[in-house]
Image (tube, rainbow, N blue to C red):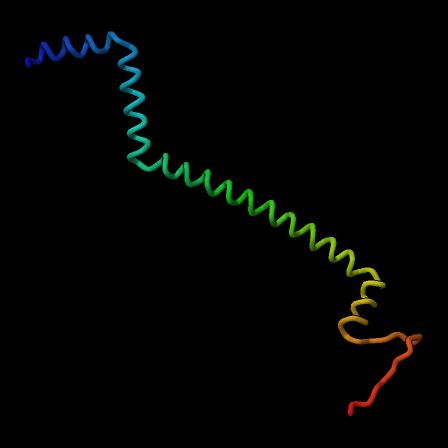
Length: 101
């Protein structure tokens, strides 16, 4: 094929905008895949979703901890914990001590 025929064939190709657009889109898609940009973009999207779920879980945990902290500041809660976990009694309580046999 001579240079002249190739030039005419190329001009003929350029006279069809649909074909030129298709070639440009194909070239763009191949470029994105080859340099890994599309892969990195997908990875970033996946990381964003994972972090969004993790942030929501952390916010829920913070809410639960704030509720526990508010409850722990209540004097009746502190007294109940001292009675249950440390076996402490108040001055008004009657305590029975049984000897071990």
